[in-house]
Image (cartoon, rainbow, N blue to C red; front, side, top):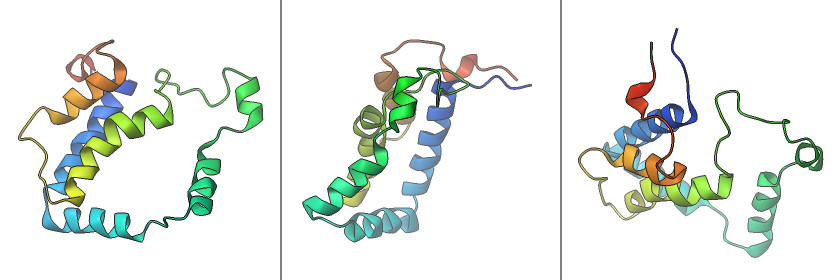
Length: 121
């Protein structure tokens, strides 16, 4: 049985993202999504409201807890993992050759915890 971890899951997700944006159709999709995003402050406020935790979840620390360890906050994940992967693709810049997903996840998680290689089957 494979033991999952936040680090392993985030690294796998980032590796899949890098693989997708290395393909021309993946870069085009990222650009299309970016261009389709609404820009008004009211619409941005609506998107922020969707990311705000429900008050009940804030009141109960275990509510919404990840069974594989606590994930980092959403804003931090977007800033340190999602944006560095996808923002360069909008401008046609390919991700670095190798090790980039692991580097981003290490920075996001503060270099703490086991590496993805430590996950066992």
